[in-house]
Image (cartoon, rainbow, N blue to C red):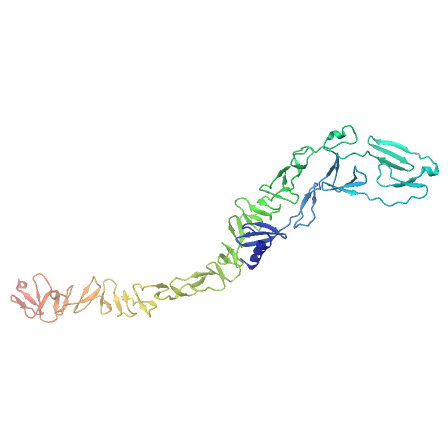
Length: 490
């Protein structure tokens, strides 16, 4: 985890509320996600807002402007007033103003007035503040008033060029409507909304416009404890639809998802089909790779699949400037040498081996194979072509021979020569008996084909035997120096 992310996790964990693994929150117009002590944040992108006729554009005191419904009206008895309307209260000297469904009373402050001569200060019916009017008693003149009824509940008085109209003072609504049954000008409006509603539709008293319990949220006229999946609660505690790609969210934009539908991954507040190159998928989330990775399969520096910096090499999942240890370079990767190889060349060929191993061609072996011999206790070098096994590179340094040949004094021969016989099983030239100049198949005295001294004494039907000093009885000496039996004369 980077130092920045570590500091962020510490701030969240110790300065405010402890953050849970997998928690998503909105911080200073950024969407942040904490997973496995890694914190990733991205700035919220605001969409273009087009409010309907029934909505107004909210002040931009949040990260993004939003369309809010028009402010709620106020009801004073049977009368309905819009937001910011001002009207005179049923109580004297009080004005009311509607503020988003709440009636705010204001006491009328009367100015200080001094009347001129011939007038007196008097508060007329229907008026809150006193006025200067002519004092009839002082000038003995008769006050002439023109009184007429504007409507059944309004009386108007013409005084010279001034007209004033008055309505009856109605008492505040009580708990019983019958208090006003005998008065056609004053009656009480009865609120018959459902118990959970603070206000409701006139045509449907069960359809709430506001909830009495301000901790609840409003969805399609119903007061709920929480918004269901696919909705979020706005600042007015109303459930609004999430973006179509979100399962749950905390705003209506595509970058304000907190979880996704099956088959999607949550990446910085957005639901995507596949994670970007510098993210990896885990448990329904796209989490950021280590800063050294361009692509990865985990959050650590040794989880890289490719490197962020050009020219770096990938060694066992870690991005490095050069291969370290028993590795060699191939296509941007540091590939591991044979475990018995102490040092590799750039193409992977072993240069020399670990102790107790021998370099044979490009591989390290614990014993030289056939056709090779040990050299300087570190290498296996090739024997001469005439040898099958050897102890050196020369043709007279053989230890074994190809099939059909025989080893004679460390050389491979086809014919062992005088005094020797070829042992096919052992692949060597064996020595004949000392009496034999040439022999057949073994070192025994009776295997001589020719003698080194004396004469050959063959047995009837054979061409080999033991060598003797003179021909025995019944044999005679031939011109070639052999003892021949009488049967040769037949």
